[in-house]
Length: 475
Ligand SMILES: [Zn+2]
Image 1 (cartoon, rainbow, N blue to C red):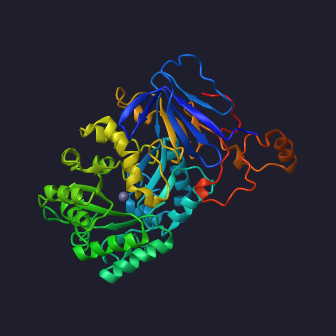
Image 2 (image 1 turned 180 degrees about the vertical axis):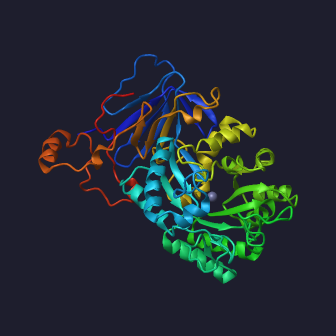
Image 3 (image 1 turned 180 degrees about the horizontal axis):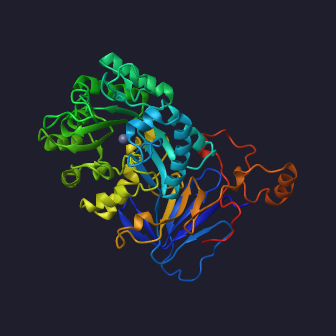
């Protein structure tokens, strides 16, 4: 019989709870649940070789930094880079099949980049397909991060839609339109019923697009042809949050401007996304409201990078962080390509936030953005009972500003997906002839696979997975 646990050894490990790099930490993992059973520091005197047993993983070595898997707190799994194809064309013209096939590649790329959790904020015109992709990953049909999804975002009538000057054109809807107190409550209920893990709503949007329509140029447009303006009253935002609380799920609010961000923060949302502009000089009001209601800001700097608001947004993020506002790292990934997610962390560092705080925002901060214990799991730090989501960087992020791109090892739920910088092949997905199964079954039985017999039914994410299949060497 295989041992019930295996151990992963590090020589340098980042502990996000302590915001510190610690030497000589080992983590024990329970195979059957993919959860951590303990994390401990090896005695300083143990310069002698480790007693590595079958299935143990040795991630010691110069410049190698072990840490919890990254959480991207703002993604769109069905989008690919807007520089490849703009948003409207992706939503309107790409087939659902193409978008889903792309999404499976996106999920794999993200996982191999060290992202073991995705907080996915809207399918962008693909209904609730994100719930199905989430479930496919949880059922181990395709590799990817653990996903928490929003299905369709809520927006008021006439706001977050695919724009067209031809009113007779039928296009898929880009949001779940909802108005009024009872209307937004009903919309939250629809999202929960559709399988959402999180409610997303648009607190503001550039909804006056058809006053000076683009892309055909208008001869003499005003200076601000289409500013982001609030979509909801304070009472409607309050109702969205209150209804989501009944369902015990978190709320994310899109806000382009500090004005709507302040309203959303006053309503008590879990997170506010973006906030690239401060036209009405409400930054301090926003910070006050965020601090009062413990609201997390997900500034999506990787998207701001492509706008004229980049420098001012970085300055506001730094000011809010200094004032004590909680940050989480989410790039709005999908508007640029999945797999390049770490750009967000690099830009947070560039904004003047310490490496330790950024790594914390991308782990524990991400878990909190997912709703914390409301999401049903614990991940993002090392503690008994947490998911065994563990990655290793091949460089020290305190010394190498590109270290977060150098992910050489990825484990999610106790299963290894990448080692020595290469993807671990998914051999178990290839169908085999019955004779083959019999032959191999004899060797493998009880060795590589956890015995499922007699196990209690579990949630999909706790289903025992093969660990270190086909590899006995430690690396
Ligand atoms: Zn987004």
